[in-house]
Image (tube, rainbow, N blue to C red; front, side, top):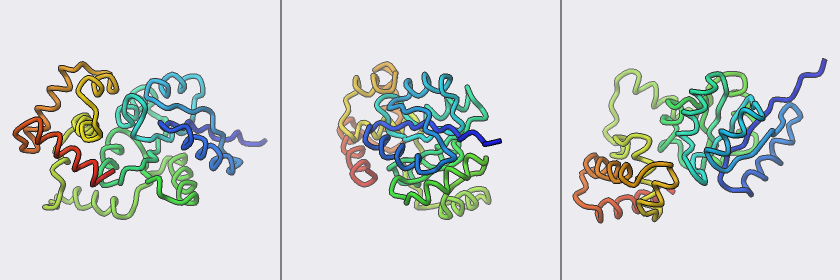
Length: 217
């Protein structure tokens, strides 16, 4: 009896990226792209219709955020496998994605072969992370401290995303709309970010956020 191909849902904010991923994944006979989404709400609407075995998630979405999507999928479908495929360096978001419920993290600069390897691993219930991240997690488990740890590591997942959007040029109202929050909540996050990063004013916050985005993409 022929085994049914594993269904994969692609969640990415760029249509051309989704098209490229669909073409790359179609080279594997054992996989089937069962749907595509560009935002958090689109993905959540598609999952019960397509029932994917794997959700391939970008972190930067048209609305919502990949980390929030992972948390919601984990809550609604605890056994569903998720792999982050993101342009962000793993040092910025990989640990946050794993804590949220993803089984693996891969940068978009990776080769097609590495993507295939990561998907195979995650579909088999295995974690997929780089050796550098694995070493860092071991050090943390042993209680080792990293004096070079970035100040942004003190931010919550939500605060980090607000910080990134500030640096990308979004105003408070636009951030609120994108993340499905109230402007008052965004203002509260801004104040918390300033306190945690020792920034004295809104201008300092904006400059720090812009610099962070320039350095981290």
